[in-house]
Image (cartoon, rainbow, N blue to C red; front, side, top):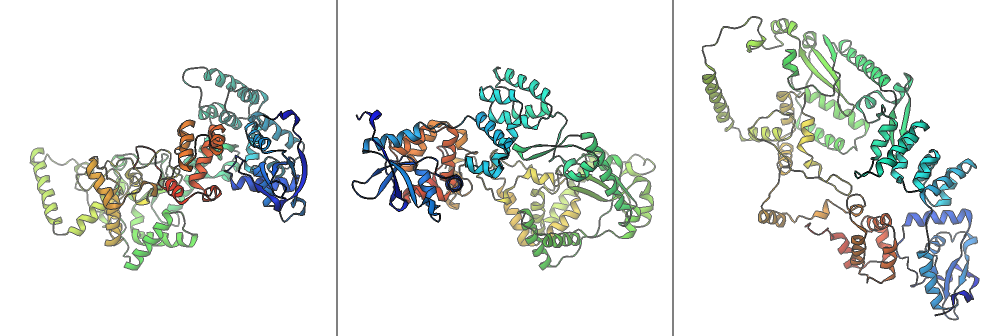
Length: 617
């Protein structure tokens, strides 16, 4: 072997047009976004490190063996005369060039995150702009802001990160704190717990210890009140930059602002809206039996009479709203159609009844209308807006004991039920509409048929890369929307959607209950429907690659790209850190540009498009 201490390399200025990527260069996979960032870095700061290459005999062309990313970046800068000629260190022979190619990548070592964070902080203190820091490091400005947030941590936290006593995600969790003494105290607890057999504290536990009273911006109270009203009342805002989350630090102020806003909202129903009374409810739902406990009577607005065209337009707008693509004009049109479908309460009805207002779990307002208090029931019945109650518990005086025994009453109820079923046989359409309504979950935990709906789980916990048809949304989610519903009124509105839409809904609800544990039956259905799992699922870093080991990723990489175990592309991949391997496979499956860079054959493209983990079909 050549004595490498006597390498006679020369540095030459070579026209860029004479440069090409040598087959000796082991870096075959690059991210286009990274090349663009490197190009901007070179444009601003110049080419800090020369390329390494091997000349083709006596000809002008030079194959680049070290600096493939820099060569790709320079290709984007050929509009700049400064980079149309490039300084290249020329290897004296092929053996040396091969060693250069391997050594540059193999000996590279990234800065430790703690050192990188401190360097970001030092540049910031020197007045270097965030945009310039991003260019220098070849990262996004968002990444710089997050690193600067970490740079503001107490030194002991960064020391613990450098020493490996805490991880980077743990360090990020400390950025929610603002009490340095408490942060040091929590750090000691984190380091101590890390030694236990339970695996230490989670990021969430650290954040909770640092801000035990903070309320997340996703809390229903925060969503309903809003940041501005809370701050005007003197509330302090914190934040978790790494979770893109706002924290409300004064829960007592938040509660007061929440209650005051809800009270003001309730008052609007007794003013211009004309209801006799309005009450607020502090929880995010009305508990089971609430109406019976309060002995409320209910009146219903007569459902509006929508035309067939209006029904079709309603469904079209509702579908857009479900996909979060409805503009303001469409939302206003949908609201108007919804009011027409729901009907309106008359001024006379409102004069005898009221509303209950509360805030749901997602921060939206729910209004239960048409409630008649026990003390107003007699007047409402006399006015003809409320039907007399046939329940003894609602009468002012106890009724005499019925001569009909409980056993006989049960038989009579069965007879009544049988008569209803017989009558329904004459209207199959109504029966199917009612089944669709039952399965839709719009009745909450009520029911129309003697069916127990137990939908099988059809979505993974990690939903990235998974696109389940919205018609198969879980029955549990639909039940959530059914609390406080008025079954008769809602069913009438449901039917107004028209036969076609109701049958489409029934199809979706029935399919969402599909289980088929029988293997042969399942295979028959798959064949008849040409089922293809990759139509709804694509492997990603989060849903698969980050959840398997490094050796598995290396084998998969070689199999997909038809690489021998000792191929430079395979050995380079094997030397990467686990997170880098995950990222490369994620890009290979999810980025057409990355696949194009590899120059994959049609067979390799198909293999990636069809690939599934073993055990899946």
